[in-house]
Every structure is written in structure tokens, then in C-alpha cells.
Amino acid sequence: AFMNELRGFKDLEQQVKQRLQLDHVVIVPGDSDELSWVKQEMGKACVRYMKGILRRDDTVAVTGGGTIAAVAEMMTPLEQAGNCLFVPARGGLGEQMENQANTICAEMAKKANGTYRLLYVPDPLSEESYQTIIEEPSIKEVLKIIRGAGVVVHGIGDATTMAERRKTPQEVIDTIQEGKAVGEAFGYYFNEEGSIVHKVRTVGIQLEDLQHTNCVIAVAGGKSKAKAISSYFNLGQSNVLITDESAAKELIKGS
Ligand code: F6P
Image 1: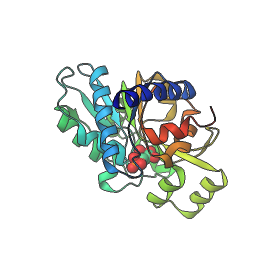
Image 2: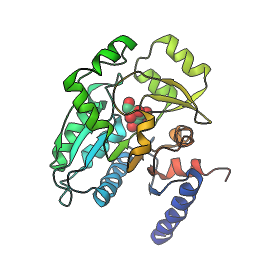
Image 3: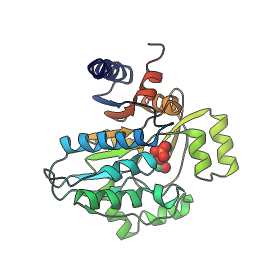
């Protein structure tokens, strides 16, 4: 039965890979909506994948969220990839401390025996402050490193869940709901077709930057995130998905 299960996942991985047009898919057993250790398993799978691709002196940008926090939790020293630099992908995006990209980035760097640079900017920002802040020399320097990262590791969330978690102002929630947003990643909210419904104004990686990134790894699972995952991939910016069985089965429904 165990061997069947392994083979089963190979098929499922292949189907998800085709459906979402990805280079690589890893599926861990279970549903992370229901069991927290499934999230840790995705974390482990992501660390394993990162170890396979990271090279000396690489720069890795990471987003916030509980799933990427699990990747940091599971990180171990990167023996083959010394001196990697970790940076947050974007600003805090209104998350709690433990879910912020800065916090996760510092923890991941420490566990990997790498180094890190952090980003100190409030967000969301007004257009005026945004323009001033991105011209600040110390910020400009970190932003350049971030936008040039060779590897990006990011979460994907359900749009409504994320808008609520971030204490988003009511008028923005209205925009998100009227636009029928289902998914969120990097501060962008997407509808089912993958069109951008709303974008949080903050510094760091912008969706366009991902076209120049060697490897973009999405880590997201749980049945509740299936719609969010497929909406995000309609824009097709990541090459790799690390997910769980429940999300994967939901993703291939109707194919
Ligand atoms: O806020 C950062 C972020 O990566 C979002 O872009 C994403 O929607 C969310 O976190 C995922 O959070 P979690 O892994 O806790 O579901």
C-alpha cells in the first residue's frame, strides 16, 4: 500500500504539473488545513528542494506567512551552498510579527548558516511616501539586492482570509470582493482568471520582477487554498509548487 501511495503521488504530481504548466511539483501526504504537521512536511520538502538548487553566494528572497515560517522552521545548514544571502521579498504587508517576511528571513538565514539583510519600511504606503522611501540610499541598496534575487520562496493565500488577517480597510475589502478575488500572493489579489484585482502598495519584489528570477518556488497547501493556487498560476510566474495531497486533488478536479 505504501508503494502504491508513492506511485500515486508521482501521477498526481505529473497531473498538477501539466495542469498548472510548472517545471516541478512536490506533493506531501495529508491536508494542512486539518493537521499542522502537514505544513511542516511541506516546509521540509521545500528545504530539500532548495538544497538541490542553491549554489554558493545565491540570494534568496522569502515572503511572510505561516507556510514559509514552516520552511524556516525546518531549515538546516546549507553545506553545499555556503554564504547564501536571505532577504525579505516585500514589506511587512500588515502581518503579525511571526508572519512577517523579515522575521522569517532572519530565522531561515540563521538555520541555514547564511547571512541576511532586512527591510525596514512601514506598509501599506501612500504614493507620496512610497516615492520618497524608494529613493532613500540604505533602502535603495537592499531593494536592489531583493529585486535581483535568483531564488524566491513565497506563500499563496485565500484572498478573503488574507484581507481579514491584514486588517485591510473596508473600502479595500470592498474592492477585493467586488473584483471577486480568490487568491493572494506578494500583496497582489487575483480573481479566478488570474487578473489582478488589487495590489498593496509596498516596496520589494513586484510581480514583473519574477520573469527575471531563475527559480520561483510557491509553497501552499490545504483544500481551502486550491482556488487561490490556481488563480495565482493563471498568471504563471512560479516554476515550482510544493503543496499537499488535499490541495493537489482539488486542483486537478475536472481535468
Ligand atoms: O502575507 C504574506 C503571505 O506570503 C501572503 O502573500 C500569502 O497569501 C500568505 O502569506 C500565506 O500565508 P499562510 O502560509 O499563513 O497561509
